[in-house]
Length: 223
Length: 164
Picture 1 (cartoon, each protein chain N blue to C red):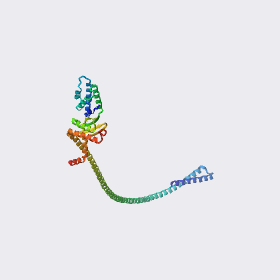
Picture 2 (tube, each protein chain N blue to C red; picture 1 turned 135 degrees about the horizontal axis):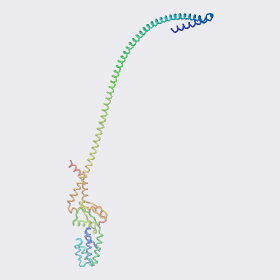
Picture 3 (spheres, rainbow over the protein chains, first blue to last red; picture 1 turned 45 degrees about the vertical axis):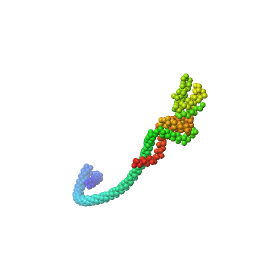
Picture 4 (cartoon, one colour; picture 1 turned 180 degrees about the vertical axis):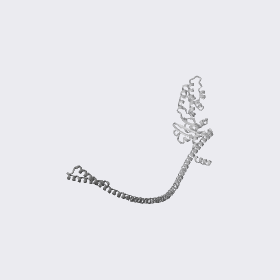
């Protein structure tokens, strides 16, 4: 605003000076110096007047502006205070709501978590029980199967061992029989051989010759 | 010439060996002064041959050393031709054994067979007979084995009975 005022004054001074220049040209009869002084004096006076008026006007404007400023500042402060108060209340309210909501949500989440945990533990317990039951059943079946297999294996083993023992007994009995026969024969040979007298020996030799003769051993010699 | 009265009395290859040796002695003695043939026959020849040999020599038409030599050579050849029956027996044969066996051979097989006797005590009794590649064995051991084999079942029954 002050700049506008200066501009107006400057323009007015320039117009005044130009007027007087034009007027001087018309009055070329006046001495130039007096006329110049006169013009400058007029211009100076007018300029002072204008400046004074402008200053007054500016003061008025400044006063008015100050007044507006104070009013505006006061009003703005009030408004800002009100707005701040509103915001504060809003924030307090929102904060309280947020805290409440958070607490509510936390409680809900905790309840849901506990509920889920409870359900999960129950499910896990159920699963564990079922698994345990299945394992128990499986273990029983396996135990029974294993027991039956072991019994069969033991039975097979027993049969096999009995068979081997019987075979061994038969073989041993055969060997014993053979040994006994050999012993009997050996003893008989020795006892009978030693107990024979010459006459009995002669008879045995003759018996051998007779047997040979019967079998045709001497067929080409016989008389 | 007939040598049968002499070799008929020969019974074993051992006696034949003695006769072979005695013939050598007799032939040597024929050409020596003062050689008493009869006396040598009695001392050198087996008893069974002494008598028939003396008789055969006295019955020769020519009793010269040469003729007697020829007779003895003939006897040696004849004895070498005798057939041999090999008998393995389990005991030392006695005179009785040799006589009994010779009697059986003369009765059933002929006069020109002599025995080659040997001993195998493992036979325990009986004999192993072989002649010209043929072989027959009948001994006490076999008889006992056969008897025991035949009686095997009854022996086993006795053994089982006694073992229980």
